[in-house]
Image 1 (cartoon, rainbow, N blue to C red):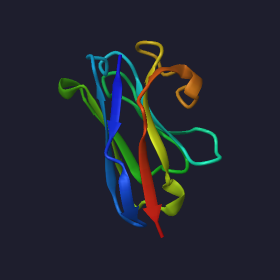
Image 2 (spheres, one colour):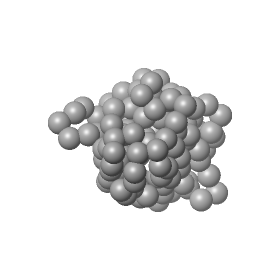
Image 3 (cartoon, rainbow, N blue to C red):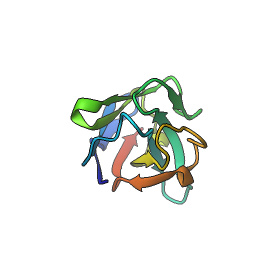
Image 4 (cartoon, one colour):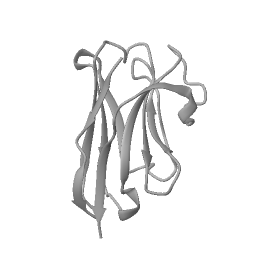
Length: 126
């Protein structure tokens, strides 16, 4: 499984970005997909997850209410719509696939994911 993240860039505070994660195989109907982020000098942080099939979504406290995760199974793509961006949102954003099909156990932990995209950089200027 290969994951390709894209859509990052430079945006002013208050702006919006939509990140895209494309998978090389059909997987979103069976496996949960998540976005994590990592800022320089900080640990990787959970951002959002969507269950296989898209029934359930969960968000990290720092982004709740400002981001939306969605998936398009037909396109093998997961999206992260980010609004009201803040300078503290600056980070490399990674998409990842949960290691267990039809599970969301420990969805907030990076150790629960077995496949990762290469990351896309989001920079929010003040």
